[in-house]
Length: 264
Image 1 (cartoon, rainbow, N blue to C red):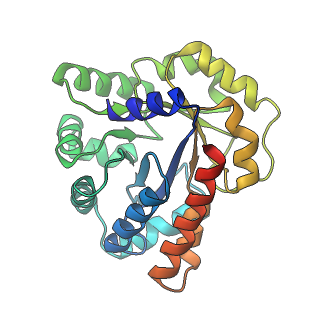
Image 2: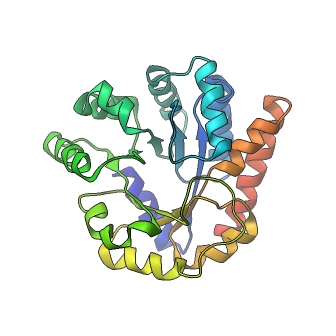
């Protein structure tokens, strides 16, 4: 699998994975494509693309607004697949889709997986996926031999269920840094390191930390006990505040390049 091989290679060289997230279609799909290519050039190892959804329960206001702008611009699942297909012919890093369960269910589980694979997506993250449905999706992937990772989200509130959440997962574990929704934070729980340790005892998969990471200082603090960091809201906010696409591309790629130096 492409996602796992990225981590394997980085770990062998003593480096950490840099995984930026942006919302597909914010402010429009053509701009998303340019930003993704700029992030890869600046040093992103894996790109996480959010499929805009009208009721994004796990997201804070910054990403909620981005989803709304993308939907108003006409972005839909079909167009996101077209974007992934286009990007896959231009970049070499894996693309992971973050998508809520309802669109997946409406599309049809196996049909959705097949479409992800044919478009070139290397993995998917479904933040509101029930455990029962996780088992069904995992069995579809295994039975069909589909080369795609179902990446689990593990929250500090689900410590007693970590083993079940990561069972059958692949790619890496997305560890949620703190309770609540996405959004930049300055303070993290003192139990974060033990939480990561508990995940590591339940799986051999690499662990990447997301939710709330928004500056170089925080990345410096957390990089020692994880295999990668995921940044989203800070990048989406840069895009939102930019006066033109050129400014958005410059700000985002400049920040990614800065983080790349920190992560090796």
